[in-house]
Length: 64
Image (cartoon, rainbow, N blue to C red; front, side, top):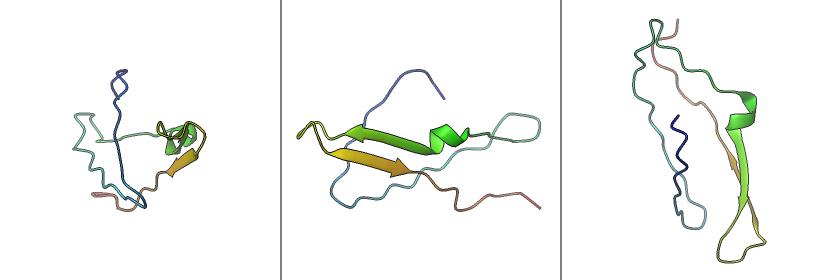
């Protein structure tokens, strides 16, 4: 991933779908460290509400 941090705004009880395009790697492999699947932060409006994002890999194409 690029080192540039990007921000997004989501409404209450929002869900997002992220599609990762095919890799140019010889085996088409993406690796995610366990630490990258959980992110926490604060809501900028309140400054004190904790927001926790949990990422789940729901579907993997091309694996046998």
